[in-house]
Structure formats: structure tokens, C-alpha cells
Image 1 (cartoon, rainbow, N blue to C red):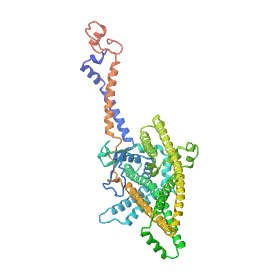
Image 2: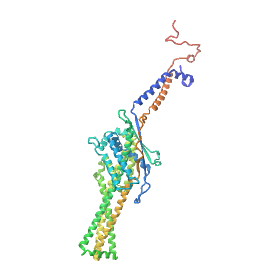
Image 3: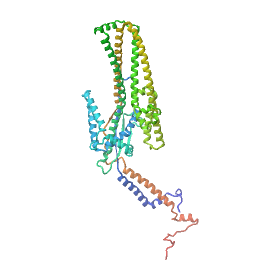
Image 4: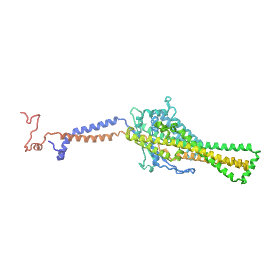
Amino acid sequence: MPDTFATRTLRELMRVVFLRLGRIVLFVLVAAGVTWWACTRATPIYRSTVTLMYKQPSAKSPTFKESVERPLEVFVKAQQQIVMSDLVLARTKVIASDPALRKAWADLRSRYDDVRRRRSLPSDPYDPARTRELVAIQAEIDEFLGRTTPGGGGSTVGDRVKKFLDSQQRELSDFRDGIKFRTPGGEQVAMTESFQISVDQPAPADQKDSHLNAMHAADILADMYMVRFRELQSNLAGAADEFMKRVVDEHVKVIRSAENRLNEFIQNELDSPGDVAILEQLLKSGTEHGYQIIATRGREAYLRLTDDLAKARSVRDQLKAALPKQCFEPDGIGRLSDDEVARAVAVVPPEVSEANIIINRMTARLIQVQSKVTSLATVYTPESQAMREAMQELRETRRNLLTELAAHARGIEVTIKAYEQRLAENDSNLKNVESRLDKINRKLTEYQRLKNDVLVAQKQHQDIQQEQVDAFVAAEQARSAITIEKLDNASQPDPSRPAQPLVWLYTGIAAGVGLLLAVSMAFLADHYDHSIRTIDEAERYLGVPVLGSVSRQGRTILPRA
């Protein structure tokens, strides 16, 4: 009868092992063999890596009034969200899975790189034709993402992407799980100016050169990320550019109105064109008196109010065009769906953020909540408590931001009415002063007023044009604030060395685990074996001295005669 293993000698323990050595070896071989067979029959997964480099320009434009430096840590994390976004992944999956689309995209990418390379050559100075060529190839890329695909039966890339997003979420989730985004500097991303994107893709045995799927996916993923980055930059800069165009148009109307009034005065009030020269001499002789100074200042105030009113109207029109009509109805925001609210707050005009600190902070808060939801989505399922709370917080933040935008729009309406009232009062005061001036020197004063209106309007128009140039420069700086380039094409996987499964590693682990289980089962079997094998065991069991033993044969102690 066996005792506990703690009271046994090493020799007895080895005896237990060697008595069942054959079974142990068989168990280990079976475990290793089954694992090796499963690994060799499993679909291999190959990995491809592409490295991208980013950097900020060292020089700043002299037309910049302010320079907002965004830390590289924030930038890299923002790029991770772009890479992992559904649109980028869906475009990558659709193009990478279609050889015709891959070929068409490779041709576009080659032409785009060639144009950019020729523009950057020292021997090829800046040429507007090169810029137009670059804009044209970018337009072709945008068209490719929505045009009819080769042999697609009339369906567009955009339609296929939308269909993929609507009906193949599981495949999209699996594709996202196979993507890793990392920086060589680890958590200290500011220690490096590059980041890597690795893509794992299965290689079905029935597909030719299937080990290249990962390389195609990684290469196209990097391209789709850069295209999406350019789209976002263009969208952000487009709102500011449109706003400045509206302001300039308002000032052009003011200039045209002032010039028309001056021309009408010259044609209707002056007896001959030579009177203009006389009026000019009077103006240069220093005959301006108190009422003229008051009138000039009043007109300048009137034009400033007109400028402020034009800007306020432009912001109001922009908000009304961007926000749904229900936002301005009682309890209208509550009737909007979450998707309508999300579209309404997708792009907040920069002028509104600068003018309203609450909207500025709520926009920053919305970005934080969106980043939180994206981070949780990689860990939790949509039904988890954390994801539900995060999504609820995101919806509430969007509705609060939309409420604040609607309140800001209504506040602008009040501001516009105040400006109009002030303009009316200013106009009334100006008329009183001008009536007094007419009594003093009717023609000279009227001419001086009209000409001064033209000069002031032209000066303000020049200032606005300079602001428009500054906005354009700022937009271009924003587009190139951080330059992103691929260091090289995606790495080509070795067909003989897949990333998964690692056959020999898994087989070795299975053999080790099988050995541990087999030895454990051997000792467990010995523990439940109550047979007496030696004289010492018999003495311990009977409690009396034992002189000898007879081997058992069958069910009898002694052999039959």
C-alpha cells in the first residue's frame, strides 16, 4: 500500500514513473502530434509592417498672429483614431480584396508620388502648373473613391464601402483586431518621429500568393490613412475660407455702394467736371472744422458697425445652414435623433469656438469623449456597462454642444438687432450733423463725406483681404503643419514563416504540457493503487513481522499441484 509522496524515497518515486514510462511517452507524443497536425492544417496568418514618418516644420509664417502648438503625443493618438476609423478600414478592405481596384489604386499612387517628387526637386523651381497637376491628381484620387469600379457592374467604391459597413461588421471587427499601431518610443511618443502599422491577414490555401494579402492590406491602409488625413484637413480649412469669402463679399458691396454715391454726386450736384479739382484743393487746404471731424468719426463708427453687422450676419447664416431647423423650435433638439445631432456638431465653425469659450471647451470635451469611446470599443462589447455609459456620455455631450450652438445662434440674432438699432441711431445722428454741415458748405462737405466713405471702405476692404490671405496661409500651414510620409512600402512576408501559428513553438509547448499532465496522471494512478508489492508494505499493513512472500498467480496464493 503506498504512503504519501512526502514519505517516499526518490527511488520509489522513480519507480512510479518508470512503471508507466510507456504510457507517459505515448501521451506526450499524442499531445505533440495532435498540436502539430492542427497547426499544419490551420490557415496561416502573415504579418506585414509599414513605417510612416511625421515632422513639424521648423519655420513659421510671418503672417501668423498666433501659433497654437499641439503636442506630438496628442497628434499621434489622434492619428491612431484615424487609422482605426471605420471609413479608413472599410476602404482598405474593399480595395485590398479586389485585384482590379488594387491595380488601379497602385497606378494612381504612383502618379501622385511622381508629381510630388518632381515638385520637390531643387532643379525644378515652384511652378503653378505643378501645383495644378498635383490638385488634378488629388481630384482623381477623390473621384476614384467614388467612381465606377472596373468591372463592378455600375457600383461605386463608395457604395461598396457603405455596403461593407452596413452588412459586414464582423469582418470589419476581425480586420481591426489584426491591426497594431505602435511607436518606436513606446509611451513616450515625443521621443520619435515615426510610427508603425502592422497588419495580420489570413492566407487561404486555395488562393494564389495569399501570403501577400497582409502586404497589400498594410500598404493600402497607410495610403487610405493619408488620404483621410488630407480630407479632414481640407474640411476644417474649408469652413474658415468660406467664412472669409462671405465677409469679403459684404465689404465689396459696401465699397460699391460708396463709389456709386460719390459718382452720383459728381454727376448730379456739380456743374462741371472741373469742380472736382476745386473741391480737392479745398480739402487739401485744411478747411476741415469741428462738424466735419464729428461727421467723419460718426461715419467711421457707422462703417465699423456695418463691418461688425456683416460678420455677425455671416456667422448667423453659417450656423443656420449647419444646424437643423428643429434646433430653433421649442424642445426641437429633444426630437432630433442621435445621428442628426452627431451630424450637426460634426464641424463647429472656428469663429464660433473663438467667440464662445463655452462652445470651445465643450468641443474639446466632445473630442475627449469620442477618444474614450473609441478606446473602450477595442476592449468592451457594445452591450457592456462601460460602453453603454460611454455612449450615453457621448450622446449627452453632443446634445449639450448642439444646445449651446443653438443658444449662440439666438444670441447672435439679438446682437444683430442691437447692431441694427445702433446703426439706425448712428444714421440718425449722422443726418443731423450732415444737415448742419450742408448749411456751412454743402458741396464741399458732401463731397468730402462721400470720398471719405470710399477711402474708409477701401481701407477696410484691404484689411479684410489681408486677413483672407492670412487665413489662406494658416490653412496651408495647417495642411503641412505635420508632414506624413511612408518611409518605404509595406514589408513582404516570408511564405515559410507565418506570424501565426508558430508550429514548433506550439508543438513544444504542447509536449511540455503533455509531459506534466502524463506525470501527474501517473502519480494519481499510483495513489489510487492499493495493492501490496513488497514485504515492507506487508509488515506495515499487518503490523507483524513477515518472513517471506509468495507471488500471486491468478486468484490463488499457491500454485496448484
